Image (cartoon, rainbow, N blue to C red; front, top):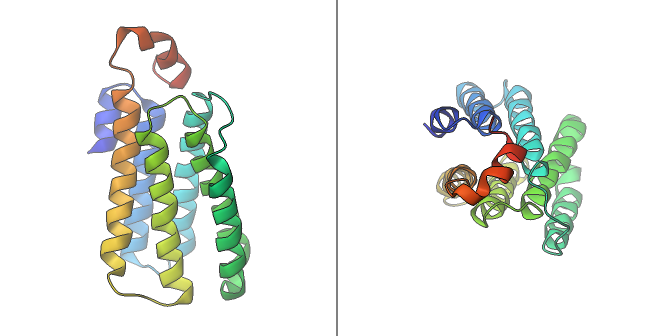
Length: 177
């Protein structure tokens, strides 16, 4: 629904990122083990699209990026010994989702967008923890809750940030015709 709303509101990059994320959801739901790399690739593509969207709304470096980078580094170091043959794709994915969260934080988009990006990082960290280190209580609720909140926050932040006439210049720089 969010992808359709973004498309109707003429935000093609946002619509594409949301749609590609939905493809990742379907792939991981159909066969979590057999289609894991395909699902991961779909989400990697979605994060690359989000990163392009956020870079187009770049504002300036913000120090709030540092904890995100440190977290991603620490999580990667902790997770690495458990990855086996998936070390390269998962490490690449962590780099891309970290870039997405970092560019969201440094964008001039409303705070809902970086909050959503960090929630996405949290959701995927929980998912990776469950997959590679062992499941934990309330796993599904925590993963899906943070994931839905992430997508909703990002989409809402982008869509609502351009309702004011004075935002016309920013609209063009973020993907609206």
